[in-house]
Structures are given as structure tokens and as C-alpha cells.
Length: 501
Image (cartoon, rainbow, N blue to C red; front, top):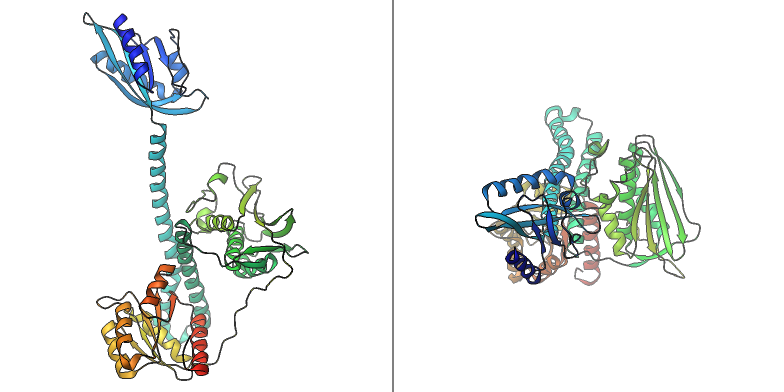
């Protein structure tokens, strides 16, 4: 036993782990040094199992102990323990038998704190589970608009002229816009998570931002027949911010209220000043939140399970985006709910600035004049995309030709000499960058203007297209009204000074 005690003292000196001594059948703990992780035992104790091991782990620990005693082998087990502060942590414990004259006289053990490793492993499992849930939700959300789009196309195919075309066009536009919003949300989430989103700051009145957000959310609010009331601050609430991104914050909160409130519910928007902060509240009479749901509410891709969640749809991105965007403006988003069935209130707080005047938010220009028979070459290996864009351009006065690969595009450009080329970047064999470089080397094409069409919209993507010789960079899916406005503005500039901006 003296040798055993000496070994124990040496172990205490040599390690920062928990160390302990047990009697032969583990009914008594003789000594334990807890290293501030768990409480020390300085006098022999028979109550060690109750003191250190949580109820749900005791059976498993005892089973491993009994096996070690029976087989006279080392005890090894990973289990939970009650820490000094009463919380629960994880340890990996190993004890070896001390044998004298063929009999076990004691067990010497050490336990390492593995709480951080266990937490990290659990976090990975949770992340993997959320990924699987997100992918399943994404597939579901993309199928939702695809089903009516496919049905509409089938109606056109089967019924022909009998189909009520205006109604179907509205439906197709609505569903395509829904898909675009899903993809845009994913892109925004990616940009924010990688720190690539840049704010276009200006001094703006939150009243204007709120009116824009309400207009954007009106179709969804109207669809659910919600009663919307607005109480705006009488004094302007001027903030230094990006009007587009702040509109996104409030539109996301309004859309959330619309989706999670039963039809015919109430949604109220209130704005006011609190000290040096602007406060905007979005209140709803919806399904509410339980206390345990709130901590996860602003996690990216979080899907809060409650009645109506699946029917409401969404990728679990909107609230997370609202929170991140508010934080990028030096503010935050908080939520309060009286519980399930008692509605929710989302509050946005943003720092105010003191401005003598507030620049207005730019409004969209009215549609410009037609393109006056301008020659435009559309190049895309996606034939449907190329043909449909070409048809739209021809309807507003352009002369259009279409090519489906890089080699054909070069041939058409050299033979036809278009004024402008709309060029997809991701084509096989010869991509859009190579087409642009070759066109720039052709004397006959020195005045041709190039617009890149791509699904990539980061700053480095724009720099790459500029280096390849493109004049403009547009991200798919391109809003046709915006494209037309760009083409008209380029035509006006060319007419004024002989070049296109």
C-alpha cells in the first residue's frame, strides 16, 4: 500500500488530470484530486457514485467497473461527471489495478476533461443534421414553384389558344420570382458568411425604407388577408445605411409575420426614436414562439418546428439575414413573444445620425424608347435561355441573332458585326472569356460592346470580366427591365459621344 500511495503522489505531481484511488471493489473512493474540474475527496467516501456521476450515467459506469473487476483488467470509460459548479462535463477515465500477492489491493486512476471535444463532435453532428434538413427543405421549396410552372407549360401545349394567357403569365411570373428570391437569399447568405457583402451607405430616412419594404411585402400580406397598420415616427429617423439592404431587413420581417400568422390576422409596424437609436417594431398576432425556440431563431437555415411551419415554407434564411444585415449597420434584431399562440414582436434597433437633409431613395426610371433596330448578338449554350432573351429583345426593336457556342458566336460576329454582344461565360469548349478575348483582337470588332451574363456576382468575378474586355457584368437571372434600361442608356451615350459607357 505504501508503494501505491507513492505512485499516487507521483501521479498527482506529474499530471494536470483528475487523479483518484479506489478500494478493490470500488465501493469506496479513497482519495480524489479534482484539479478544480470536480470537487476533491480527501477522506474515504462510499458516496462517490452519487456525488460525481449523473443519474443517467451510473448504470453504464458500474457495468464497466464490474467487467474490469471480473476480468482483472484496466477500467476505461468515457462518461459524464458533475462539475464543481454543478454543471455536467465529460471525462475519459482510466484506472489500473494495483496487485499484491495476486490480489487487487487498490485501483489508481486518472480522468481527462474531454468536454470541449465532445461539444465539438456534437456541433459537427448538429451541423450535419441541419445540412440534411436544409437540403431536404431546399428541394421541397424548389419543387413548389416548379410544379405550377410545369402545369402551365402543359396547358399551353394541350389547350393552345383556349388557355387564359394573362392569368397563366401572371402565375408564371409569380413562381419564377419566387425561385429567384430563393436563389438570391442563398447568395446573400453566402456573401455575408464569407464577409464579401459590401454596404452602399448613404444618409437615409427609415420612413422611406419602411414604405418600400411594405410595398415589397404587400402581395404576401394581401394573399393572407392580413390587416396591416403602420405608426410612423413624426420626426425623420435618419440612419447611415444601405437602403436596399435595410429594405431587405424589414421586408424579411414582414414576410415572416405574414407567413406565421393565420389568415386574416393583424400585422403592425411601429417606428420611433429611443435616445440615439431608431427602433422599428414588426408585431403580429401569429403562432408565437416558445422560450426554447427563441435562441435558435436567428441561426442560418434554422427551421423552427411548430404548428404550420412546413406549410409556411422557406429556407430558414430570412431572419438570419435580417439579423446579420442589421448588425452590419451597427444595430441588431431582437424578438419577444408571449408564448405559443400569442404572436411575436421583432424589434430592429439602428444608430441614428443627425443630418440637416435626407437624400431620397432613387426611384426606378420609366421604360425608355425602343432600341431602334440595334444589332445584338445573344450567346448562350442554354438554347432556351438564348432564344427567349433574343425574342424579348426583338420585341423592343432590336435586330437579334443567337449563337449557342463560342465558335459560332465568333463566326456570326465577324460576318454580321453586331453593335453589342450578350455573352454567357460558362459555355463548354470555348467559354465566354475566351470569346471576348478573341473578339477584342479582331479589327472588325473593335467597337463591339460586350456584356457578360453569369451566375457569379462577386467583386473578383466582376474584375475578371473587366480584365477580359467586357463593358458590363450582369448576374443571372437578369431582370429584363433592368437590361433594357442599360441597353437604352448605352445607346444614348453612344449617340452623344460616339462611345458606349
